[in-house]
Image (cartoon, rainbow over all chains, first blue to last red):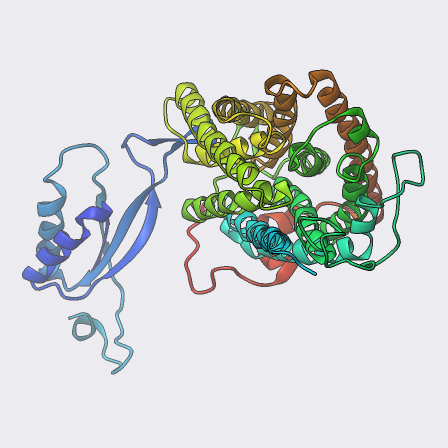
Length: 114
Length: 407
């Protein structure tokens, strides 16, 4: 079992979601995130004071899958995210998962994730 | 017996009263929009309670201090007694051809409440609520009407020929001086000025700010239009035109200057700019000709931008630009009467501006100082960081919304 954490651009979320579904990944969690990477900060002016916004809006995507589905998930994200080549596209982290419990049925492990 | 003219005049004065009343919603929206989400309940609370405080104290003593009839101390101070005292014939043209006694009171009372509201924006996000309410009550009950009596009550400045049609100095200046003292004594909000210079603390709702500005502009037709004190067709329509052109000039002036200075057109600056133009024309809306009113507005727009930047450079933190709009453009507008109207002299206008400056600075400093010693003026650091909504009211303005705040 693996947990895939992907930091992606917010505007890519709909397409990535579509790809995931196409590749039989049906369960994931999405949250708003702020992050700072290699991208150029946004310049802002408020009441005559210029300043930079370097913490930018990202989306954090969490997908827990059985090992045989890791490639499906990663490929789905990469396919969409690599269309643009500028800096700051995001990252994917893959972590081992110790246990998974489905709350409704108490199922554990492989059964619970799928 | 009421004549048709008297009825029409009085009706216009009451319509103007309603328009000025609506300005309080404008102030509330503007100030809420230009401050952070965590202080919204507090801003709205202040703007609501000040209306009540302003109106009640004006009924209790303000009206009698401002329009005393006979003065007690030279032509500086008079008092016609507590409460409202309509004499005989209060509702006939023999009281005044433009309005009844009660119309007179309620129109002026709305003005008084506006003066107190001006301070609220400048001290926002850090002032202790109880101390602020106490200050407002004292200032609007005593200082505003005494200052007002010098001109509108027929006092010494009126006799010298000082002119302030609808209150660039009497309302906006008086409120503005107290705003300056309040913002100065309180010090800046935590995080506003760092070693690297001014750090923007952004307002949380620009659409609300825009609504507030348009409501204020809308109300200004009553503020200036009602200050004709009758429905005189020529005078009211002239005032409508000068008021509108100056507000427009204020937008263009502030747009040009802020665009030039920071390479970007700043919405908050042009919103302030329209108010700047309105404050600027208020002293001379009936005596400055429409062409010149555009110039008055343009200069107001330049001044408000310059003043916002200057105050920031002096570390005087005014979250909504109240000092720049009301005090700086109030002074400019009062001077403009001397410059653009041949019937009034610059030196008398200057004397008036300085007299009000000295009186308002001294009195607001004294009141703020005493309140600070007795009760404290500012919330403590932790309360300010949490936000006044929680620390002063234990209430949220946007319950159920996610406040996405990294400040």
